Length: 382
Ligand code: FES
Ligand SMILES: [Fe+2]
Image (cartoon, rainbow, N blue to C red; front, side, top):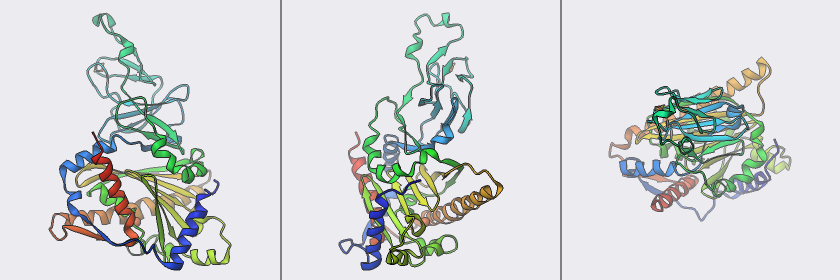
């Protein structure tokens, strides 16, 4: 894995924050709590999420022909399949005869040739083409070529599989993904593998979760029993990358390493962390990365999906134990046990009337960027 050149820029900016404090042009601000409790607003947000590319898998999870992913978290039944020729297809998991779900169980699975509907036995190949209709003479006017599974835009970039949950063939993925090229391109994540996928639900609004990852302020407090000690006396720096947020949090020893001029891997002394707009969290830990996405289920519920992505499949018991510990620490200790947990604590008081708005400080500024981007895009929606 090579070091993205942009890490030098992040290191410099972070060093300036350590030296001079945060950008003096930033101020504190407020956000009304109604944005977390408005039902109509949630429906608009869900519609927006379905119009944008969301990374729902790592390429290694869909590597061999016939591997499929059934994914419902965007509120649309998605079926992704790797074709015989290596092409990746995304489509709706809905039979074109009378609408039966083709693969029932969400998650990864493997099929041999394609999909057979359980109801009347229509067959589709891995690309979604309707290949066989039992007793086709019963449909004198049926044109099989017009009844392929409904396709969804899909692309593979940065080792991730990005799907748009709105039917169509054409989609300009570059518009949203190009701003991430300097950060993700050099990581060569397509050569990595997923150690484990962790999923869970949490009783909280999805935006409260996104805010937890746009906030460098909480690390030393909320995470004091897990990763906090690695971030001794930390500072953070954030900036916009298109609609996304690129940030870096200093680890213990950052200041000393920079002062000595002996910085090898930035990731040993600072942690680059991102929010890919709209709902994905990406953390470049030392030696591995986490991709986690928070899908709104209801106003006060999310579905959380976290892939721990590592450089290679562990070959020894020692390596397996090492990643097991990291998975346990990050997924269960930090994300579920602390970040999602505190979001549930916030949710439980949302309706109490204690706050009609929340108060945010300078180190929480990316939260304002996130809400502004969301507002702007929702306003622009047809
Ligand atoms: S609904 Fe699928 S074959 Fe009839
Ligand atoms: Fe956190």
